[in-house]
Image (cartoon, rainbow, N blue to C red; front, side, top):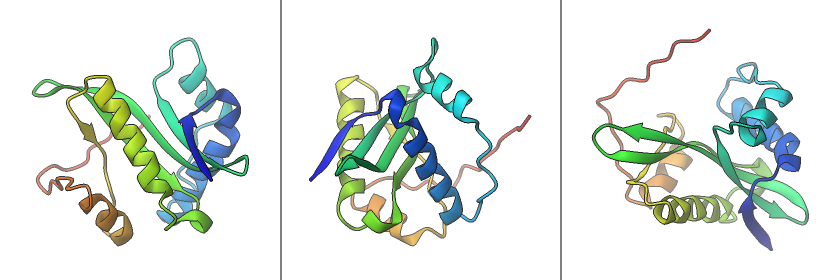
Amino acid sequence: MVIIRAAQMDDCPAMLELIRELAEYERQPHAVTVSMEEFVDSGFGDHPVWGAFVAERNSRIVGLALYYIRYSTWKGRRLYLEDLIVTADERGAGIGKLLLDRTIAFAQQQGYSGIMWQVLDWNAPAIAFYKKYQADFDSEWVNVSLNF
């Protein structure tokens, strides 16, 4: 049985391991540079900037939906789904659906105007999964970032 629940501080090592697993899958194994201290503080410190739901099976964290609140001057408050991750050996078992459904329910309960996220254009399984939700795919916008 899979339990979907709000993440707790003690889940951070397992969550960060899932994030590293995702980076491997996305062909960016060295891109995860966040320290455990920063990860814990930014989620559970005095001024948390992210929240998460975890999927737990047999006392093991097997999935994660990490989000934060963003603001659109056109739409108002929206949830940004930073990562939806299910460990490789648990994919295809409906855990991603459970996590995304819980995240959608949370956003609706909070009165947010919607959810946004990104998916790599080559990640066909994820794209097919999101299409089941009738998600809108936008080809007009270009990702931009400034790294320090």
